[in-house]
Image: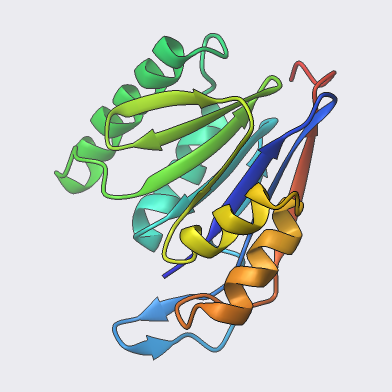
Length: 168
């Protein structure tokens, strides 16, 4: 019940997310942008369970990938999973993520990591956002399309930009 969309441009990566937050069949009334954050120069967009997203944010405060490539992002995710397992006894990843790091965009689904060179969307609204990205809309417009069409996503929309010159 989310959508996160990202696009790689020549000079930047732009990532946007909706803000729906649910508890069972109920919509949470307070929007807190639980889907996307920029921490330690990493933009992380995620869909799935809020507790896993929150733990990933905590992990990001003190950890960064060694390099911006698929292998090192996989190592980063494995280390996060091990750390998460020490806290809640569940080393499996339940969420799906988009990570922008050092001018590269990565899609993480369980333990499969791949670099995205153009655009990508995840979550319940992904088919709509992906279509909009294909039609040359930017990520924020793409998430807006998903919010207008898909009953599982809703505004407001949050957007982060990572300049390619940011080697942070």
